[in-house]
Image (tube, rainbow, N blue to C red; front, side, top):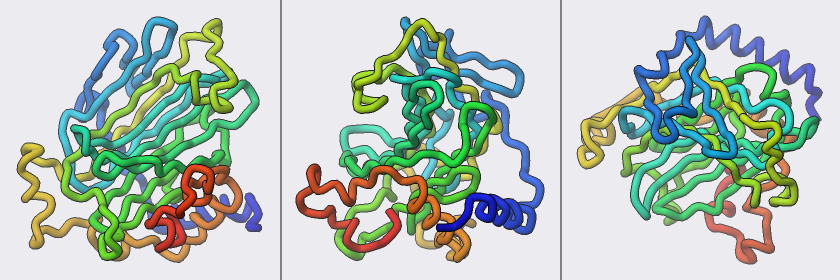
Length: 290
């Protein structure tokens, strides 16, 4: 098992060498707009806050739709007793046969770790959950959560560390999300029927309002003119930075990071849930990191 100190040191060294000075993100209004419960979505300078109370949750959505690229947001999750709450950051298309890539942050009682659940929907079919505990407290500082989507894979990242890779396995007869433009969304809501310890711990409304904070909004993706016209982003003659093999495939260091995360922080993987899936899902049979 790799020691935590060594791991964090290596991540910082790699960032210094390869990341350089990060470009500043856009302002909220440049990329996003409130999508529901507008009075519960508050802009406070460079920080946007979503509020959940016993009247309503809240959400926001991107102003445009995209096909492939990278989306990132810095989030500081609900502090203290957040049991029963869910904060989500995700990409999704529309309709019953939609595609979707989810980060869901499942609240917990004070002192217990937040659980991060990721999920992938393709043509309306999900049930691909993975859950892990983070290696830091996500409520005390902002951390960056990213989705990198290319024709080869979908990579979920936390502070640029990959925590999940969903590969394109169309050559094995497995559908992949590549032909529906997606919006980018975030929301906070009450889900105390399932979110914390399977619904055993309910939301304590005496701690409301529950507030998730956001800043440093970044979308570096191919914007589609309309959801019906994807030629700008998907044509065979189109090539973007996320199509380069050095980007769309994990480096050796990133593979080591992913292995470390799975070995030390993963607490659930649908691929190994024989009660739900007596027959191992086909995609689980074909590659190591899902």
